[in-house]
Image (cartoon, rainbow, N blue to C red; front, side, top):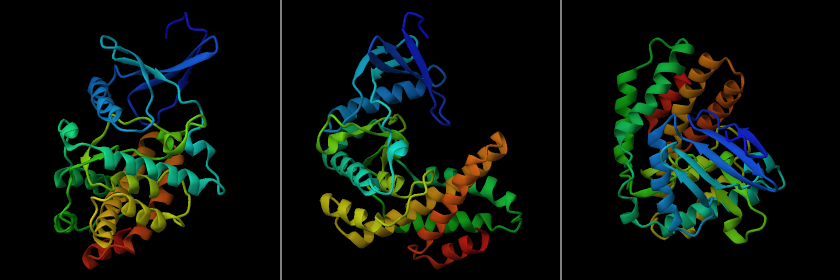
Amino acid sequence: MNSNHNDYEKIEDGLSNKLIYRITEKENSKIVIDFSRDKQEFKNFLNVYQILLKINISIPKLYEVNQKQYKIYMEDFGKNRFNKIYNKDNLYKLLKLAVENIIVIQNESNLNNLKNLKEYTFEDLKIELKEFVTFYIPTNKNSNFPTSKFYELWKSVFYAQNYNMKSFVHKDFEFVNLFFLENYESHLQCGIIDFQSAFMGFIGWDLLSLLENPRINFTRDFNDKLIKYFYDKTPTIRNLNTFREQYYVLSLARQTRLLGRWKKLFSINNDYQFLDYLKITKSRTIATLNNIKNHELRLIYEKYL
C-alpha cells in the first residue's frame, strides 16, 4: 500500500481472492479493494454498482476507480457489521432491516438494467450439488450413494417449481456483508457491500441467504414471519404457498452445496471453524427438509445426511 497514508489495516474477506484494506488519512478513512487477482470480479463489481445506484439503498460511494491496477477506493461503512453486533435483543430488528432492503431492491429493480447479469439455470445448480456428492458423501463413507438418481430427482424437482429467474440476486446477502449505519434513517441504515457476484435468479434468493444463514447459528423463530412479510410487501409474488415451496427447494439446494463446501475447506485448511459451519448447515438442512414435498428426495437426505 501507499506509504503516504498515516495508517492502513488489512481486512479479512473470508475465501475471496480480493484484498481489502482500510486506509486512514488524519481522521478520515476509506476502503480499498484490490481485484488484481480476479480481474473479472473488478468488472462485475462496476457493472453491478451501476445497477444498484438506481435503487434507493445504501451502498458505498466510490471515490476512485483505478482501471490499471484493478483497485477501487470507496466509502468506509465502519465496523458495525451485522455479524459483529447482533444479539438476542436486536436480532429481529437487524433481520427485518435487512429484509426491508431486499424488498426495496426487488420492487425497484428494472429488468432492462439486469440484462448483463447471468441467469441462473439447472446446470448451475448441478455444479453446486456436485460439491455435496464429491466432498460430503465420500467422507461419510457412503459408497453406495445413488448419484445419478440424486441429480435426476433434483432436475425433476427444480423444473417442477417453474421458477422465474429474472430477479436481481446479490448472492451473498448475509450478515457479514451488511453494516448498521446509525446516521441514516429507515431502511437506509443497512449498508450493503460485496455484490460483485450478483446474477438473475429467484426473487426470494437473498431472503433465504439471509434467513437460513449457515455461518451464524441464530434461531429460526422469525423466519416464517419474515417470509410472510416479504411476500406481503412484494406485489409481483402472486401466491404465498408457491413462493414458500420455491424458497425451501432452493434453500435445500444451497445447504446441500455448503455441506460439501465446508467438508472441502476443512480438508484443505484444517480449520475447525468449517466444522462449526458444517454443524449449523446440517441442522438447517434438516429443518428445511420438513418443507420439501418430494418424498423420494427427502428419503435420500434422511438416509445419507
